Length: 218
Image 1: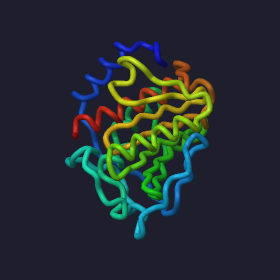
Image 2: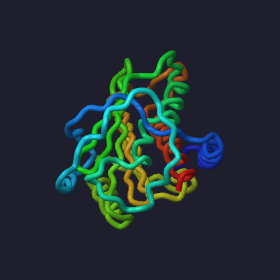
Image 3: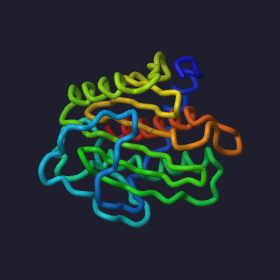
């Protein structure tokens, strides 16, 4: 990915910023969402952490971005919940040419909000680790990268100015402000959709879609 159309990536982000974003929606289930195999064991969750409330349909978002530290015991931030919102859902259905939105399941545990998209080909998992501050998020990102098998940094314009890496099995990980975003497509076949998009390209495109939402609402 370090050489995959970096100019296109920058232009795609600019287009997304003009498109607008919507807040998260979908079915929510209580309990701890297990981190992917590339993710280190998270620190102990603050006392009082609880699952996010169940929602039906898609809700609009008018809140701020992920820059401000927050108390994780209050549940995921509006920005974190964007990973299960309209914009990534629309992007996913467009890439895969889906007739209907796939079923999603949300969890909030160990300061991590996870949205699992259940596709016919397998599960796509998008997670956001909410750290107390940017330094803590970068420390967590560095630990993830050190433990990830075959991690390759995403460099140049393709990383959109954020620390980022990808893995050969279809994961893309970005760190922005106090967030660490991981799009894990390792549960999908090597290529998906009518255009045979690689799972790495899918993970990257969904990552940039979510980052655009965060930049817009920063």
